[in-house]
Amino acid sequence: GAVVSQHPSRVICKSGTSVKIECRSLDFQATTMFWYRQFPKQSLMLMATSNEGSKATYEQGVEKDKFLINHASLTLSTLTVTSAHPEDSSFYICSASGGRGYNEQFFGPGTRLTVL
Amino acid sequence: AQRVTQPEKLLSVFKGAPVELKCNYSYSGSPELFWYVQYSRQRLQLLLRHISRESIKGFTADLNKGETSFHLKKPFAQEEDSAMYYCALTQGGSEKLVFGKGTKLTVNP
Image (cartoon, rainbow over all chains, first blue to last red; front, top):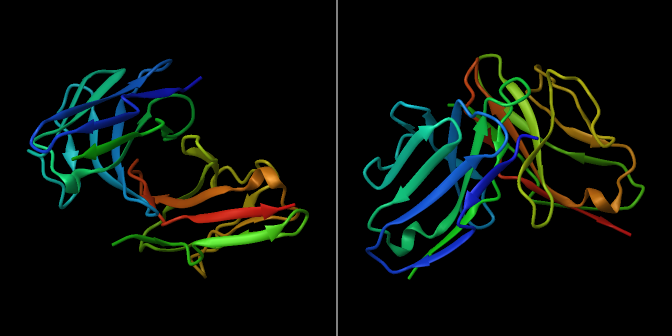
């Protein structure tokens, strides 16, 4: 149990386009979802926290208009990278909590975004 | 601000040898500490957390508040332990995780 999926696993897009990444909790209701960014050989950096039905809380330095997060249901959160540029190329990982265990976050497999 | 430091980017040991992955933190309150593991081509998953005081896959970690450390230990490493290990903390009731930069453990046959 407690599986989180992400779609797509890999996406390549042109500079200036927008890309949407989906994060789903498959077998539990996720009251909170988190979005992380991971640069090559670096740690995960929390971008934002989202709760179902409310606005996401962004970490300092993360552009809200650049990275749009929607948590429309207890099983789905989306991250839209708007007007993507090459510097947005990265590995984006979501996690969800609300399943078994105290505050345990369950991670998705990640999405590799490459902006040309 | 809270910070998690993993001083070793790479750690290589032989099978059967003891292994210790270091983790130090800086936080003024009472954090909750975790170790996450990421095996090759797999997602990040929780290995253990300090409040559970349990041993998972032979690994243990003790929170030392005096030294602000949460080192991960295993007395006899196995090849299947080769993975990326991340130390992380949450602060006082928050669910937000702060990760260290990770240590890549390689267990050689």
